Amino acid sequence: MNESFSGKDMVLVEGGTFKMGSEMGKPRDWAIPVHTVSVESFYIGKFLVTQKDWLEVMGSSDNIFFGNDYPEVFIQWYQAIEFCNELSKKEGLGCVYNIRKVYSHSNDLDGYGIMRTSVDVNPNCNGYRLPTEAEWEFAARGGNKSRGYIYSGSNNLEKVGWCINKDIDKKKMHRVGEKNPNELGIYDMSGFYWEWCWDKFARYPTGSKKDPDGVISGSKRVLRGGTMNHEASWCTVFFRWSSLPDDILPVGIRLCRNFS
Image (tube, rainbow, N blue to C red; front, side):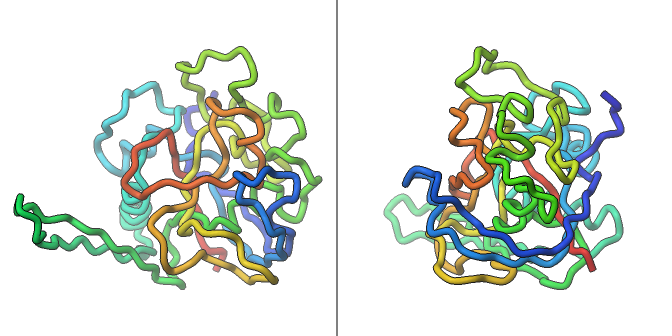
């Protein structure tokens, strides 16, 4: 594989309207009700952020280094946000996220306090960011070029990703872009590693929405894409999961940027 492949390689997703969610899913998918969503044009990473990308921006990593073209995973949501800002600064772009860390004193008998982090968005900034959940699903479905696949780029997961249903080595790491891309030329959005989205996790709303970016309240953030350690039903373009922003799981980053 060409080692110049990077999470900074972007694909233009032209704006459009689609049906978000699916009645095919089981209740645990949290994919209902199906509702109409419109999104503006945006750029999204062709690949997940690689270990090379991470080291160039952050300088170090707690992960085992497998190689330049392997994804950087086991990233907390807060670390993903910080990476986006650091990459933006490195390239002379504005930072999308305002990150504030506040140490709050505890009234507990042990006397320990808690470091709390809050994040909000500069909406018209030109820097790197995480995709919203709606942007992620629209891109995974193939945008305006969608052929209606249940996985990102195929109805056969083996062509675009991995899953536990097959005889695979669960300890094996895979390079980005080893499987086929979807209709937009985006790789690994089904059955590779979980991907962080910006949104806080909640049940879907009813009615149509334009450029939704999630609910205001809530503690967990959205995960999408499934992993190679899950069954195929977890790897569909509509399956939703979530985790706390400081959890350490097999999760990577797919960068996003505003179109204008």
